[in-house]
Amino acid sequence: MATEAQITYAVRESISQYTDDTNISDRYIMFLFNLKRAKYLRNDLNNLQKTADLSVMQSLCLELEEVSANECGIEYDCGTIMRTKQKLPQPLELHLKSAIINIKPTNRIAVPFNFVNKERAIFSKYSSFGDSIYAFLDNDNYIYLVSESNAVKLIECLSVTAIFEDPLLLKDYKTCCGCEIVKQCFDSLTTPYPLQAHHIDNITEEIVKMLIRKIQIPEDENNNADEK
Image (tube, rainbow, N blue to C red):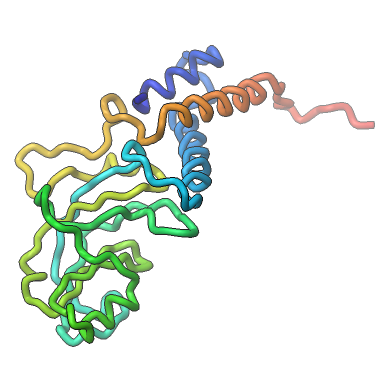
């Protein structure tokens, strides 16, 4: 799979734009790439007959803190609940299923928590499985954990696997909590861009065609076009 650096190089190679003074930046190329990636993945994943490919998923770790239940706009008898210290990057918006694959403790073999919407989390205390831990993503993009069991307050870190709208945002997130050596979830030079190779090829071709048209259109800098 290609990295971000390899993708931008391939686009530049195709449009012969290498110099630093070009108006087409790497950031702009990846902005276009991310938009088209989201479109391709939505088309794929909204088809119930298709499952999410591992190559499009990304994982990150988020530390937890204890907060008042009122902060997330719900009333929960325990008074406090657990919330991630950082917001989750925006998951891909899908019509038929969630783009969040799982939320679990950082232990590799741990069982994922019950990921539900906020309403189900509120009423989980009336369930016969009230001691189970329920996770939900609120409108503020924080993840919350609720449970009738005090064990939930012992959880210090979450591992979240999802398909994100902008995979490059994971440059600002870590692969573990409290690590001595901090490792970013995404590195432009080494991390594979989370998309299948055939989609990368198709999107590259679309962007190259788009940028070639952009380069070939002369700019009327003085705005002195002849008027008739």
